[in-house]
Length: 156
Image (cartoon, one colour):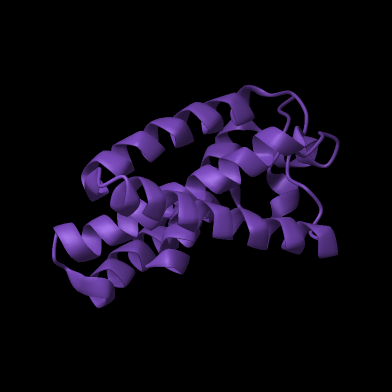
């Protein structure tokens, strides 16, 4: 007998918080903190966009790895990973615009294409892009890649 992983998803525990009023308050604070942190490292500390992107990419990879290995929802780990997507997204958008010189329209077009590809591949492989399906490691990778691209698009 073959078990469809999507049917198991309804019985598994999600590591994504419910989207209620508190979610949006924390999300706005995390986004603001992430954008401020990205600008602080790249501009105030004068490390530049490439170095800043490298720093925040390492932090993002570490936090996403920990988040995916976690067996249940950990609020500080989840929101720390959200902040990491925002800081990395900020530095990526600024790097594309200012260092690579492709401008905001070019950066937005690239990130929009990556976001669309992420969602399309996620749907093609899993058959859904529902938040309720974020209960397996593979789906979590799709989730966090999509979050990263959407955060980058939001700061571009």
